[in-house]
Length: 67
Image (tube, rainbow, N blue to C red):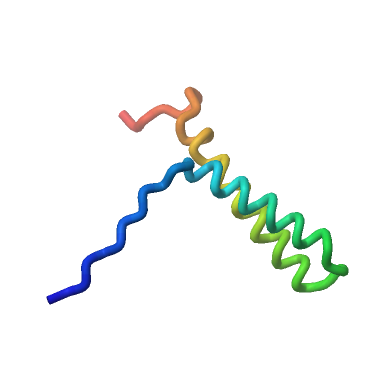
């Protein structure tokens, strides 16, 4: 029949993993000269940071569920 899915138990939260990825991308970008490759890495780092902060935004008390 079909193949079984490999399941991975995550030991760290998504926010932690995204923050770590963003830090690594920024570190790699700092070693490159200005150019498109560096800008691409910085863009990916900003996206990872945004993703890491989404949970805080979603669970903030300022947001109310629709009534």
